[in-house]
Length: 476
Image (tube, rainbow, N blue to C red; front, side):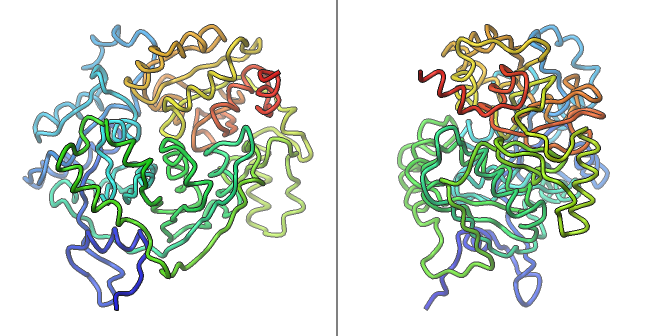
């Protein structure tokens, strides 16, 4: 009788080329696809050239410009400067030389890698996708296994289509119940990260399940899987279902016709077998989740917006107490401060976590008929050129602009400040991004993570704000 297996184990087993030890903990893993960017790929291509190697399967890769590019609204004015950016120019040369499709700064489908791949239909159930970005876990939303890899692994993949891979343990995170009004996928994953801690899922692949996960849109599931890495997970998966199949049906590069019918038969088997064992279980009551914000410098240093900043003196773990003390010093905050009393200087909506059309719609609903508070600089950066076009077709751009947000071009932007979008030293930013590390949005920048709707509410209030109060006033 076949041993029941988890979805994660099925994905690894189906892609194992060879076991590299007796237990099968380390394997040579076949990888279906990758997405390259201008920031993490240069050394890999240099290594290929120096070794005289070709890319084994060029069509299994696409490349995008997303990390270092400007997102200024007048992007076309930058055309003459493209050759002056060494990283973008080198990516262009590498793609030309090795036959890889490039979505450069002026391509109609340009955008953040983890937004572009799904909207093209290139992330499919059952795949293994590895890329030089830790948030490659995003693709678990489709029932695929995605994970980030380093530069040497990118080179190995490009040359061989395989990676040396160490199998992870299995963790199941079950989120059951109905989400309260105003609570989103971002709040779910922030609550999970808070409960597990920054390294609570280290060494695990996390399978998200439960009625609250099933009720999320595919965009919401991508947000959850995207931020699973913030609690240490090296993989995150959600079993594909009819929502997944419907999402993929109209994507330009997803299977069509008879090929799609054949694929659906295989995709429907991609779920954990009854009785399969997990190494760890976590249960979360969706009804108990509130809109979340971070107060420190790690995504697990978070709390419901209705709370106060915790006192590190009450922390019994020495390391966590020191981390909290350092975080509060960096953030310029004091224990006992009400989160809703913290004033902001900036509001940013964007990133591979929360810059899809659904995210922009949610923020626009809050902003309709309202204005950004005086003294707050607000910007929205769509996750891709396609998201930007669709938002403009719906008039969402006008809502943002009328409210006082700057409507920018697509890219990673202020998520990691590798471009001209930065938070100044000492400034405080309400942000829909995934990380609030020291200096992440700029040297000395102070970042508070939250959902796009919560960012919109904070921008209007001029401080951290419970979006539910604004939604209630809209309803009235």
